Image 1 (tube, rainbow, N blue to C red):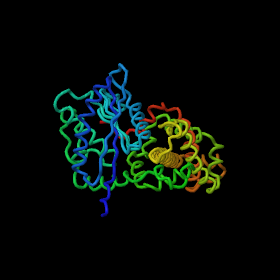
Image 2: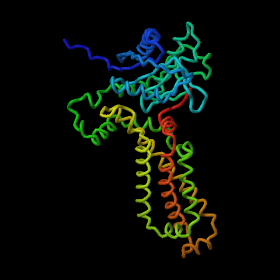
Image 3: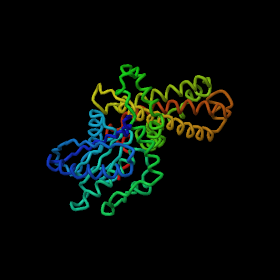
Image 4: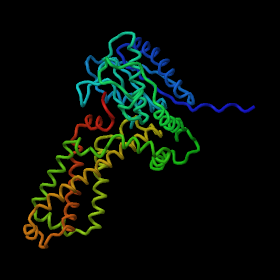
Length: 383
């Protein structure tokens, strides 16, 4: 008699960060059954496994740094081979876009952090925490915020109610996403080639779930980076001003071969991406040597976010340069360059100026505070 096929397993870790182990244990004993019941009822096709880990803190600060907690949750996730991890703390979180926050998802890392410090102790404390965790899980699995059902989370803590079920459309999306998550990881498959070959391993990690990788990248809206990173953008704009003021720069830019400019533009974007990615240590989010598909996927998401951000910066600088160049009197440019400028000449110069601006922007990007830059890349939102 054939045995029934086992349901795909989803492993979720809860990192309980509190001032005492007794408090963390009691919170876990209440949250795990509530979460398991919610998810098992809505997704019976999957087998759910929850694990809890204690993480005691000894800080006296009223507000905790959420980035540190996000990185802690991610390290636990990688070390214990969880699919998703949520850290629950009993202290309030210091916000980057608001004074404090109750929940922060980081979908690129597939982890989130929840603060119980804003909840008043009472009978509905567990219900509110469960509702926020369900919201975080939906966000980490690709659902947009401010949607109906479980993804509707009021801004005011007092208005949070017990978790509503996911809508039918949301469940259909999550069924596909959870199937991808439950697939065997590359490092768990001993037959998978290239396990010890890093470039090939990263390519296989991308090929294993390209839709999930690019969905996470798009969720971060990396094309807005030039408007979020002030020092990066300032360095790029200042470099362009110097280029505009130099007759020699105009002469060089206008006379450069288009193929040389195209090659230079590609190389400048790649160099700027590598500079910021390595200079800000964006890949240092797990213990050295911890090779896994989850870690490789996370690093790919972060790299593509930086890459798209640099492309966006180059395009913004090109448009600004072209507009500025078009208002400069033609006779003045003719004196500087020795040729009567046409549109093709202005396009060449604008490409040249944007190229230099991207390289200067990479230098400015490395002047950004490491913690602030990581927070902008890691945090989806603050609630």
